[in-house]
Amino acid sequence: YRDAEKNFHNISNRCSYTDCSGNEETEDVSGILQCTANVLGLKFEEMKEKFGEEFFNICFDENERVLRAVGGTLQDFFNGFDALLEHIRTSFGRQATLESPSFLCKELPEGNLMLHYFHPHQIVAFAMTGMIKAAAKKIYRLEVEVEQVTNDKLCSEGTNPGNCSCLTFLIKEHENANTTKALPPGTSQSPLDLRISISTFCRAFPFHLMFDPNMLVLQLGEGLRKQLRCDSHKTLKFQDCFDIVSPKISATFERVLLRLSTPFVIRTKLEDSDSESKDKVMEIKGQMIHVPESNSILFLGSPCVDKLDELMGRGLHLSDIPIHDATRDVILVGEQAKAQDGLKKRMDKLKATLECTHQALEEEKKKTVDLLISIFPEEVAQQLWQGQQVQARKFDDVTMLFSDIVGFTAICAQCTPMQVISMLNELYTRFDHQCGFLDIYKV
Image 1 (cartoon, rainbow, N blue to C red):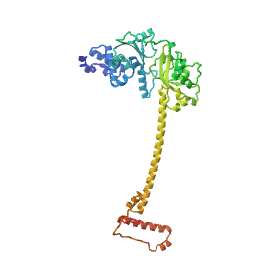
Image 2: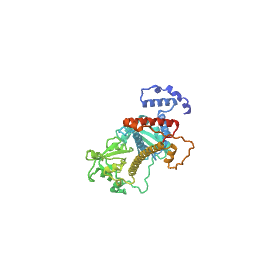
Image 3: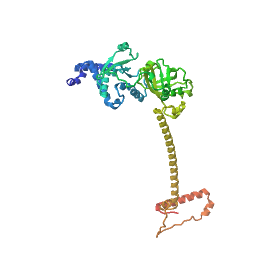
Image 4: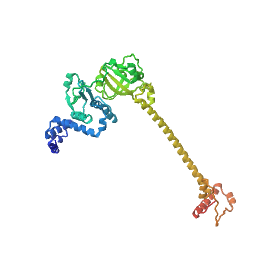
C-alpha cells in the first residue's frame, strides 16, 4: 500500500463525494471509501474492513484501559458493551429506549459466536466487520473470520431475534473453529440436579424473580414478596406487579430477550394507589438472565436505596438485604455520612457562637483599655491591663496647672441647667484641644 499512499492526497480532487454536502452521512462515507478503493486498486469490501479496523484502533488508543476491562472473552466483551453504553447514557441524563443500540452475543453449539447488533448506528454498522476483527486481535489476540448473516438465512434457521432492526454477524475463530467447550467433570445439565432448594435460593437472593414466556411469575424472592405483600400461593403476572423503568421497552418476553446485556431497573407496583402507597414503591436494579432449561428469564437485582429511612419506609430492614449485597454497605456508609454531616453542622454552629463571644469580648476589652487610657497615660494603662507592676517615675522639671471657674455658683444660679452643661462642654473641649496640641497630660 505504500506506493498507493503516495497518491492518497489526490483522492479528494478525484472523488466527487467530497464536494457533495447534501448527501446522507452514510452515503458520503460509502462514496469516499468506494472512490478511495478505486484509486488504491482495492476491493470495496476490503476497504470497508480496513475502515472498521482503523475506526476501532482510534477508539482503542483513546480508551484502551476501559476496553480491556469490559470482558474476559470476546463474547463477554460484546455482551458487556450494553452496560458501558448505559453508563454513558446515564452520565448525560438519558435512558435506553426501544430504539437504542444494543448488542447480544451468543455461543453456538459448534463453538462459533453469533453477534446481534440491534438498532445499529449507520456508520458503526458500516464498519462493524472490521471492528470485530480489530477487537479480537487487539484485545484477545485472536484471528477471526466475520460473516454478515442475512435475515432470510436467520429466518430459515429459526434464529431470527425478532422483527426489530438488527444486523447479525457470524464470528469464527481460526484456531478453535468447530470445537466446543467441554463442561467440567461432574457437571450436570439437568435442572433436577441443582444442589439448592427453591426456598434456600429465595433467601440467598431475596430480590430475584423468574417469569415464563407468558410473563407469569414463577418464582419470587423473599424481599420482593415482603415488599409486595402478596400471597405466596397467588398466581402473579409480571405486568401486575412490576414496571420496567429502564430500558424503555414493553414488558414482553421477546423484548426482554433482546436486551439481556442491558442493565434493567424495575419498579414495584402496590395495590393501593394513594399517595402514601406511592412513597413505598421500590426500584430494583439488576440483570435479566435467560434460563434455557425452563425457557424462562431470571432477574437478579438489588434495591435502589441508599438511606435507612427509605429502606424502613418500604417495610424492609437491613437483615432483608443479603450480606453479599453491596447495598447494605451503601446504606450504612450513607448513615455514617449523615451522622458526620450532622456533627459538622453542630461544630460549625458552635464555632460561630465562639466567634461571636470572642468578638464581644474584644469589644469589652477595647472599652476597658479606652477607659484606662482616659485616666492614665497610655503606657501606664497598657501595663495595668496586662497585669504588670507599674514602677513610679521621677520627673525633675514639672509644671502643674490648677484651674477653677470664678463665681461658678453665682453663674449657675442665673442660668438654666442646659446652659451650664453647654458652657462646661465648650470649656473642656477647648482645654482638651490645647492639651492635645501641646502634649500636656490632663487629670
